[in-house]
Image (cartoon, rainbow, N blue to C red):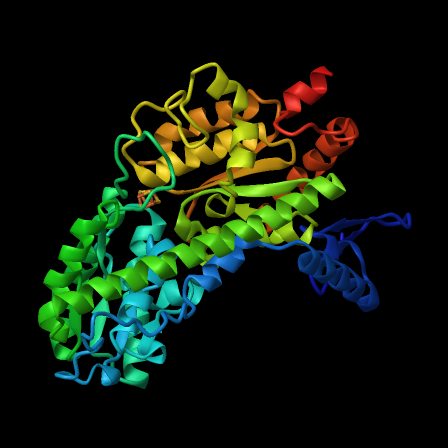
Length: 455
Ligand code: SF4
């Protein structure tokens, strides 16, 4: 039997009848005419434009300029001119929790007189970036952690070569700011915290590559859950490097917090707008239940973009609105029953609330379970020791509400485009069925899928 390869199609003619079987992993493969392919592309792009993807937005916005305003303060000159900071060029790897905290660092440095254009970020994760830079293997935990070596390689061998960098700034983030209440702690994942040290080792094992390249590797240990401590930690590392006064450091930290606040507010207000639109149109949206770096298109393998193209707006955990009216409605029954103290409390389902990103995932799973128009999509990386104990809990929280739950677990550097497409088509099919079967019954605020089905 002859197999005919026609662009992305595998067409298998079955002679002598005119029946043909087309083996194609996506909708473009179901047509043979170029015009029809164009029409599919146009339609997918229309849907993409009509449905915001806040994961993609956050992945780009985190690395933009938040333009801290000129600070004033008690007649003290804002910038010391003892060192010409305007000439400094600083590289930052686009990895791990910097996907949520980069605005703090860029605004801090920018407010100290280092132009935003001199802050150089590694490229987004891609297959090429990983292949080029991952040969120094010193880390073998999860992909988000080990890809950091490739990002340093990218900074040194691409960006530094183009125009020299003075420093590479790769902080060890020990704890994170938290929007939640009554948790035990807000620690970062230890694998993520330690990654800058493993990366340093990888680049120093056969001679200090940073020294050879005249780059200073700056890797402070920072506690974002304790702002006063953070100010002291920033002072200790940056005072000798930038000849800072304490006042300058304090004001620069304030600029950093202001930028983080802006980033947070912009995301959540977009989230609120989209939720309102969904309520008006009685449509479904999807929440990415993942960690901040799952916004990186090379870590999430564009899974969320594929869903966006099918007509679903995409939320991240950090874009879910925290307004009292929404939280009060969603969590009203548990608050009344005394199970939780407010809508940011996860004490009813998770006692070991030490790990901030894990806490947020659990809280978002509860949010999704209670919101009638939201569906959860968990993304988790291969070898993630923090996600493994949460798999069942998150699934149970969502499924007990009668809401469908979907997950891509163990994702790593391999992007299997065909199988991702097929799974996404299956998810789309179940979402449509859920919408057709459950949504026609108009939703009440705070009502779960199970409650609607019971009506
Ligand atoms: S939370 Fe999981 S995926 Fe993230 S750095 Fe830690 S082990 Fe890796």
